[in-house]
Amino acid sequence: MEVQVLPGRIPIIDVDGEIDHYAVPELESKIMAFIDEGHASIILDFSDVSYIDSAGVALIILSIQKSSPLGGKVGLVVTNKNVLKILDIVGITKLAEAFSLYSSVEEALADMSGEQRG
Amino acid sequence: MVDNKHRIERRLDVQSHTKNLALIRNEVEDVASKCGFSDADIYQMKVAVSEAAANAIEHGSPLGEKNQVHLQIECSPGRISIEVIDEGVFKARLPVTNGRPSHRGRGIFLMTALMDEVNITEGQEGTIVRLVKLKNKESLKEREHFPA
Image (spheres, each protein chain N blue to C red):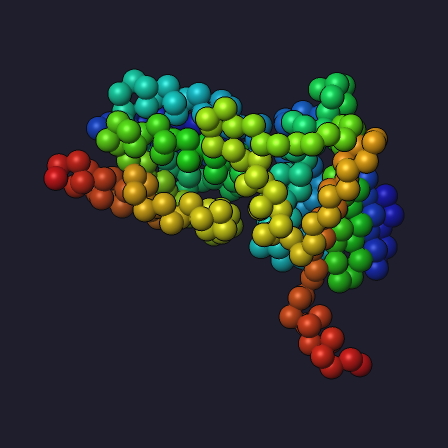
């Protein structure tokens, strides 16, 4: 797993590889530290994530729980259909508030920037 | 390892550590691919096996990394059976969340959602999680209705 943070008004946390029980602790500390620094809204770019399991799902929920009380929102970019299926099975795609699923970073930025202006 | 046209059997014993989950998933992918399962099926069984192995590492390894997790894979033409065996002693296992979202219950839920059969046997010498996936489920159903 590789993690790259692209700073901006809505920072993008770009993750590549496999998000499993081994990878999550490192990723979790990075994301939580980032939200703690005052970035209520973040985009998790999982476009290049090839695998996710329950630990990754828990991490997404934890990010939402951390961001939401600060008035923020988590944008999740997923393109891999197998990863989408896992998110669908656990019902995370139905968490409409404080969370949105996008098919590209551009789409996420356009939508979330618009919401912040409004 | 026994590889032939009709049946593949493989066993893998790894140190009980989450860094080995990828190794376990790769083994499952290799066997399931040789057995002719679809990419979607292979992905689903990798997630299910990884969840079972993560359980074994976190809850079925009283000596931590000194314990091992054992993987026993058997593939016959219509089905694959994957056993994940730990070295833990039997005890009631309740999810402990400490206010964090529990992925424990979600892991077991995922196993049952992704596999055709999930069987958990708790014994004195360890827990065996047996995961089964059937191939070509539609054609199997047809065969049941229209036996040759």
